[in-house]
Image 1: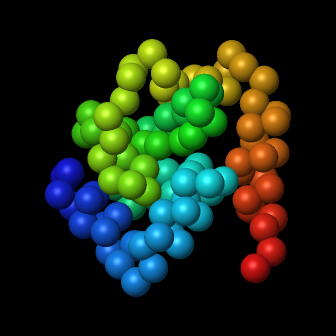
Image 2: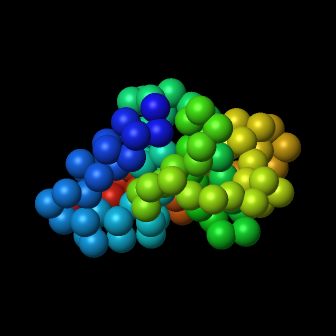
Length: 103
C-alpha cells in the first residue's frame, strides 16, 4: 500500500510540484488528507503544535510531501481531538476558509 500511496502523491505533484506542495502545505493540508482518506481509507491526524493535518494509512503517515516521520505525542486522531477540544478556530482557518476560497 505504501508504494501505491506514494505513487498517487507523486502523480498529483507531477506537473507543478512546487505549487502543489505549497498549496497543500500552507492552509489546505486538511483537504489533502481528506483526498487520501477518500482514495485509500485511513485516519486523519492533527498536530496542534504545527497546525498541520496528515493521514495514517497502514501505520504510515502521509501528507503532500510523502511519507513523514511522526512524533506520536504531537499527533492526535482528528475525530478524537474534536471530542475534547474546541476546534472552532482550526475549522475556520483550515477547513471552512479553505472550502470558501475563491479561485
